[in-house]
Image 1 (cartoon, rainbow, N blue to C red):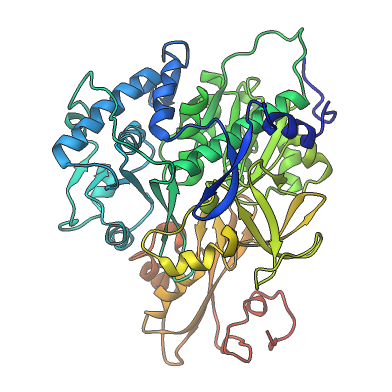
Image 2: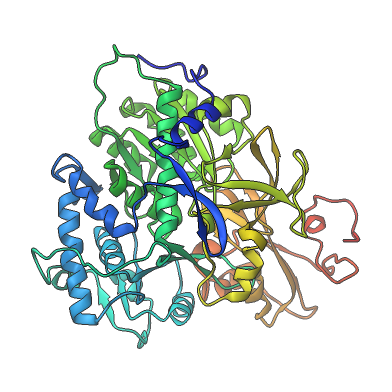
Length: 566
């Protein structure tokens, strides 16, 4: 029997109070983190290694399936523990990897990526998740910033590094197997790990044109997991199952996000270990028909992805040729879901009991800050939901003063899921982590009746297919071209990708330059998704305000004045 998701039996507030109150299954307590009092789960795992060890109980003896890749490679939770223990011993004994050391991972989604992550964090070391799209210039910057003791990479990305990488390199397809099988039968390490130790470094686009390494601690990971579990329990209490319903098949989720992104690492890799829900991983370029094939073959119950991927799945011409009856939910993030996409998902999956669920978050808050279930989205389709338990949500002005409901300002977050800062970047940390522990997201929005409505995306940020792109990085590159006098880069709307990159270029009067030449120039040092897909060559100077700042809204045609005082 399909539940009527429009008729919850309890309010969200009542369920959360029951779950997180004294004696509740997810009872919360105040703790001091980095000098700030936040609320967190009373009974929480102390670190990721404890989560990994506890996964031995999934299926009763760890025999439940942890992951399966689209090439058929799979592993149970017990096998994952054994592999992580053996690999951890190899890392420690062959490369002297220990507590606090950085180990960089540069690869596409592979079993080796997952195995490496668990081995590294089990040692109390820090997994540096390098963006698999990066060029050599970007890779070397990441290595210089984090100074890892070892680099683990797949062959394709290792080949991008010409000459000496400056750090020992292990290539997955060549010598990784020997390292992984170093100590069969080994136990997991026993190195002491503190909740506030760094577990991983994830890179975010930087306003200075260089990526910033957001530190994600063991506490951050576990805070995210607590919230994810509360959301699941919340749904179960608000929409209780009919006792006459037949037994449900095991939950199995699609994993299509890169492991070097917060969504792939947190929502899929780590959440699976904590929850026991297996994941089916896609590899290579995103292929919606492959997703449909996997859904039919493995009876996937949950589809997730950025809006681009979801559109491509549900609008694929062969969508109705595949059996998607196992799917009970679809959701994700990456950008705000339009009402049109929400409707399309419900129409594509009429049998699903909770068709759509979306959330809002960013790397710096471990990926999740608000959540909206299907019943909330039906009434408020433009909202990204209410704050998740243990996360404080507020709107502040530019001077860090709180604003009343309904007023637009800076979206601010606080809680145990918030990063302590950026690796070796105190200035960026101070700009982002504001007084009293508030995280300034860079997004603007308003709160009404507890729900967050985003007014604009992060300042200047372009979100293309879930990939964050800061225009200044592209502008800085184009400024280096001898033919370019002025340049500004903006995002333009795209139905599937969300946005694409567009460059407005003013060349020097006597310069003869083509857009193909400029595109090739950008592509020499920046990843392909950062190369502008659209170009506009202008002969007139770009409009600026009194301080000399380019008026981007005028350039884009979204304002009538050519001079705006700011």
